[in-house]
Image (tube, rainbow, N blue to C red; front, side, top):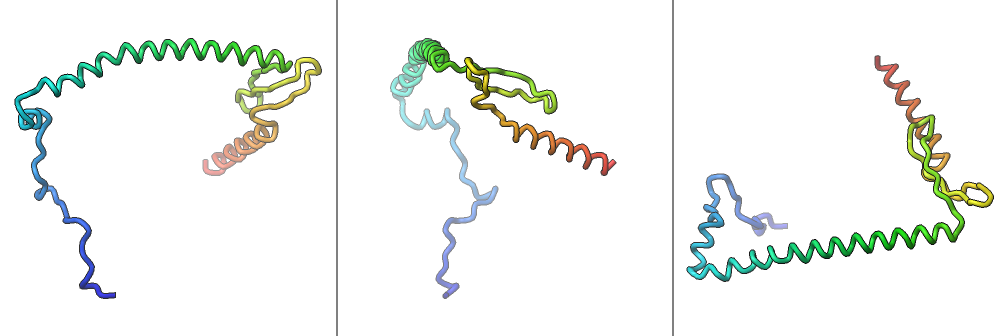
Length: 132
C-alpha cells in the first residue's frame, strides 16, 4: 500500500480557523427585503395549535372508549387482575386469576423472578457487610 496516495477526508478545523456564523437576524436581513413570506409559516404554525388540541381531545375520547372495550373483554373472559405488594421484596405484583376457580393464570413478575430478586438482595447485603 502506497502511503503517499492517502488523502485526508476533510480539512482540520481548529478554533481559530472557523468561519464566522451569521446569526438568525443577519440571515433574515441578507435574504431580501420581502419578509412577509417568512412570517407566514409562523402564523400557520400558530394556527395549527388549535387543531392539535382538538386531536388530543379526540384521542382522549378514543382512549376512554378503548378502556371500556378492554374492560368488557376482560369481564367476558372471566379473568380478574389482582395487584398486591410482595412482602419479601416490597415490589408490586400483578396476578391474572380465573374468577371461577381462583387459579393464577399469569403473574408478573413470576415467583422465580421474585425469588431471584430476594437472593440478589441478600448477596448485596452480604457484600456490604464484608466491605464494612
